[in-house]
Amino acid sequence: MSEQTTEINVDSAVIDSGTVVTFHYDLYDGDANQIESSRSSDEPFVVLFGDGSVLAAMWDALRDKRAGEDLTITLPSAQAYGRHYSDRVQRVALKKLGLKGRALRPGQLVRLPGSRDKAPATVLKAGKFSVDVDTNHPLAGQDLTFDVSIVAVREASDSERAHGHVHGPGGHAH
Image 1 (cartoon, rainbow, N blue to C red):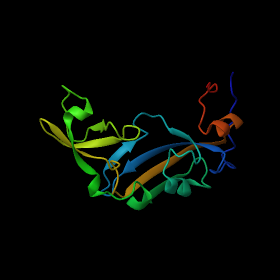
Image 2 (cartoon, helix red, strand yellow):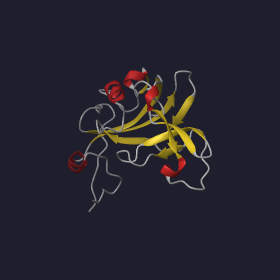
Image 3 (cartoon, rainbow, N blue to C red):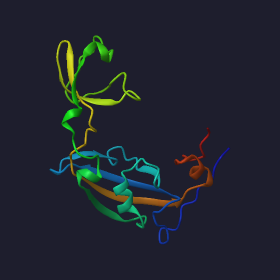
């Protein structure tokens, strides 16, 4: 079954609850090094306002903005991914990771078995029998800056609101 979506007039559309927001972003760390960009794939980010896929402080900055607007949002680490906790760095036996025969390198993400939802961890150092990992979010402790270009804003469909996420062109089947 196909679902119709309608773009709202750019002059009247504002970002708020019940809207689907399409935007491009560039993400920078506190030293102005680019971390990622939606522009590299030319695929904008499309989300239902407040669905949890974007940092809450970023939603606050986007609220009441319109399609066609560009803005820079700087978030201190406390409003981004929080502080970096040193007690979340640990040594794990390689055999517990179940990655026998795979070489690990610093910066690589691994999943820790035994943790809820196999929590991701960043490899800091890999040895012959163990690996040092950091279970903080990779961006914890960093101030972040987002350069955002709002491409479109539209009302979410009843189905999108009910499901809590955006449906693609032609609808979405469950």
